[in-house]
Length: 302
Length: 302
Image 1: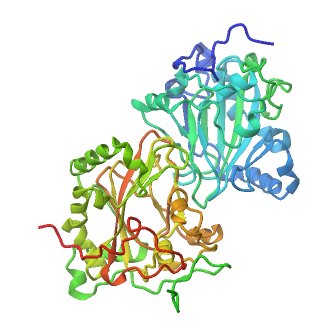
Image 2: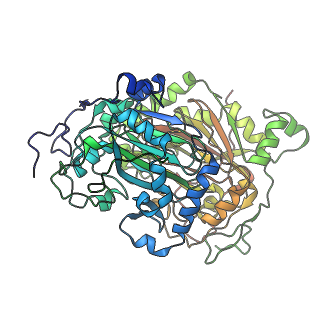
């Protein structure tokens, strides 16, 4: 199946300039928008900057159960052999665990925590489901970074996500500080779609989830994107939350500090924005990277 | 020539635990110590922490001439072909220029600036000369970092520096901020010598100046060194100065920001601490990395 008209063409043979996004950032209006939980100020900031930061959204104590679960996984040597577990390129340590909400009841319940789900409904203006969940581990001393990219650019080309109606919610499971490779974002970059150059190889994910090379904007574009602006790197204790739009450019440096950086990501997608065939023409990525089947709308925990 | 007794053995076949340094940190006493330019508080901090930071020691305007000189070098394509210019491992960009004070009259004069030289005399308690000078460039987006290491560990094993009576003075030629891979230091680490494992290959410098692998303490030791402490990453505008003891463990992450990080290093060594045969038994490194010949005591500019 091919797409007659691709609104967000990328992975191209030649350079194409960034262009303004065609989609809203916040999908609700009127009462639905005003009802919260996010205030008008927060929604405006999200609309303009492409992210929100909530220091200590959860308490460190609330996070402990999740960390205990992960400690159990760390003890299980068979975990590393599973496809959904990505190993660091230069060390035998876990870089990412995908579909963590399928592995763990506790994480699954957290996706339906009303404090999170209500934000998803308010921003996306529809029922939602989890497009992807993962733990990104960045071990002390050896953890490598993530190159600049827009998640949407990958999800569109490699997974067939049609529009920008989706966001990531990152819950810090460890302190993120200036030394352990915190998430860096380019404020306002979500307002532009940045086509990248280079054809997507089949099964690109096997390589890209270790170190992304395809789908990285060229440095000239990144310079333009940051010319009038600043970078931000939200930092705080475990339990803090970074909510960022699916098209916000982000990256993170390697971790030379002794402190592991462990972040959880839930990607909330609108039920009206389900995957089509990948726009790059390749086979779809596995279900644990990009949900195609389990698209039941999430219902809040009572 | 071999050394009958090596006080700081490293690059060993087997693990050896860190041990306390055998040398003073500050070499002056009495009136010589009290005469400045560093205050007793600053000397005590240097003695305890292994570094000092002077925000805006020079004005940004004073730095401009140096930056202009470097711009001229950047225009010269033959520069990259010289041995003393190190190229980034993953990009055709300059990583380091060694012996910059031999290339440029302006940098040479700066080594003899009394504001710097008087500190060297006060700390090292003798005449001094430049063991090494270099520019470390960390280009935006592509600049790679530096692994944890003690400079003294390298200078001792690969250059034959007998004792710890030496420090680096790093002058920031560009802003150093949390995003562009600033120098990180482990306060207090200079008080311990950390032997490393692994024999030094001949001409190791050709590889190590691009990406250091030999001479990096193992992660267990680094964890111990940081267990009760903190990391520090001094940050400030161009013209700021970081002075750090030759045995202070330091590192820096890669630079994913758009902002180049450009730092100048002068290594002041005591005239009484001149190079012997390298303790690793290899041939000495080139003069542009480790001064053996030009050891005339520096005299202050009038």
